[in-house]
Image (tube, rainbow, N blue to C red):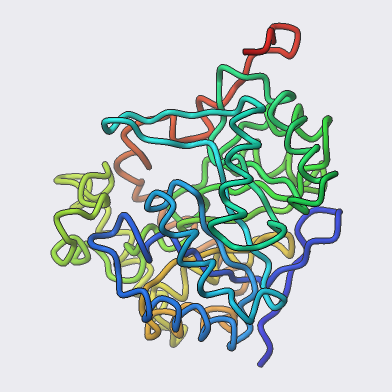
Length: 340
């Protein structure tokens, strides 16, 4: 069966309903994986009908884009390529940038690493609260006009930030963490995107692997794997969150699928304006993920999943630092901008 496609935004971008998140291929889930194996995995995914590839300049940093650049040789015309800018780490400290000079320099550098003439979907990875969003999007608009990027996206932006950005140039997609246990975006962000005709890209739809393996995933994590330190994966929170996996496992058993496929099917049933981007480094896991596209859920089954998770509660925040989330993504008014 052909992989279904979805339209993101109203500017013409069409992608496979499930994409491939490439984050873990170079970092931060333990040591980098063999390059040849990751390129083979990407080629395998594309041969199966996956067209939507997701990366960022901060992954590695830079090494993920370089990997994608090598993998795209000979297949560039078969994929929609998304990358991001805006995040750097200095001595372990998160820095977020959105000033025009930085935006342009990042785009030029990503084009070189990816070895492409144009980026299909270019996201601001996190929102710079020092720079009015209108200024950042204004520079991205210039990149569209110059043919360096086709479509503009935001990641982890608040509803008000999305509105302000969209008023400068149409936003094609907003990338958000959306899954069975991350549903805070449903109150304002998802409705805002739908009101404005903006597509939604769901990252971490498998709860960073939790919905595939449950709490035992922690036992096999490398010491360098950042998931070992996330609030939901630690101590008492992890013990309490086991109930979520057990619930999914029970429902999945009745459906004849895996709990991971059930979690992916849940997000894929949210609408025809949603694409999910589960990541993996193994062909076996990829095959399981793509199988979720053919799992059909009834309204009653969707409600059962939602009710059982909400009634048990989710313990622990998504991140330690709320700067990683849309919660702290408001920017100053344009009138305050004095430039650099």
